[in-house]
Image (cartoon, rainbow, N blue to C red; front, top):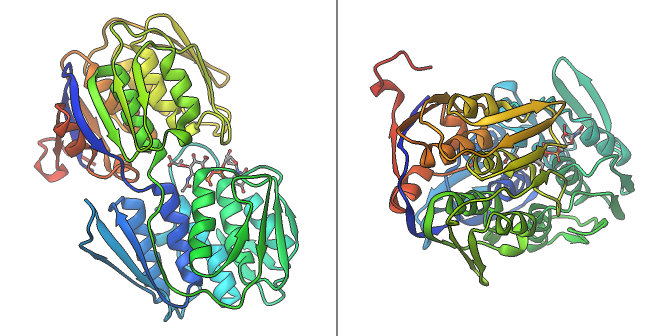
Length: 431
Ligand code: EPZ
């Protein structure tokens, strides 16, 4: 995989445009399997997770095509009218967590599905028991065998589904399966993330009848079919948050365009405690670094609207260079601290015990050769490299490509000194 080479110490200045939300696009691409018509998704960055989902659609018999659009990125056209298969093999499913989202949409469309266990960032066990319990509550027969899920929805029926935990993926899977279930399905204790609301809005643009997303009960009235549509997803609140943290750490002034402050309330309140300057407008957020960063205090991750687990790692880089002690507690994923060992190679003063990280801010951290352990841990290492003295090499950055599209170009335009080194051009035997 490729590497980043960063020379730290540059101040960032200028404008950056936030891309469409990865975690909205992935379930929406799975939802296209339900649609009897052509779909145009506008301004779609080629996140590697998006490309992996397109491969699954094509394996099933659907068509996907990127065509130049009027935005910075291309538009993605999908046509699932000729889907003939209902299986997702391990070699395709293992690349992304969102492969499991196709279980609900394949079942809704074909009434039968054989889907391999999903892949995704190695941040915990990430079971799918809540997905399967919900699908069973809608009358489906489900067999979990040899690493595959075999499901039969011939007796699909609308029902009340109670989630034992507000799982994002399980909520999305059940929403998609229920679209064609005759009668009204209600999901209790659903996830409330903005990406859930976006999935509801996309499916309704295709003729579904879903309401309540973002609240305590999601209601899905079954319909007979879905028609094509054109749709533009929400912007990526995690990318926006990553740039906000970069601004607090080393931004002379960064204008983050296409950012929805409503989706980052928790982060904003924490960043203001560091004494960085942060101003929110309707469609942009302006961040200027503090004269002297002070600790934001404590971050405890929670389901939305709590502090997002996907920004936990980037916040540890901020804490590492903020005066005072910071506390980070990750409550959603049991092994989402793999970046901490890499940050310690850069001189960060961090202790982790029983899921709690205590970070003592330092005036200076130092460049080192580090390895991206997962998507957001990789982003944390980029942020640390931007402020470290000397240079930092980050290996295994293919994991960062999963959820940040050409972030090196965006940072370069802001004045960072960051280069992508392709694997084959590196002297050592890169993996
Ligand atoms: C989605 O993952 C996101 N991925 C994750 O973003 C995000 O961190 C996560 O939601 C939480 O917000 C996509 O949307 C593609 P969950 P998902 O089901 O759906 C447990 C990123 O960096 N659980 O809400 O997998 C699970 O183990 C990625 O962009 C079960 O126990 O998250 C975890 O502890 C990483 N059984 C908790 O629930 C289940 O059946 C939250 O998981 C499902 C989940």
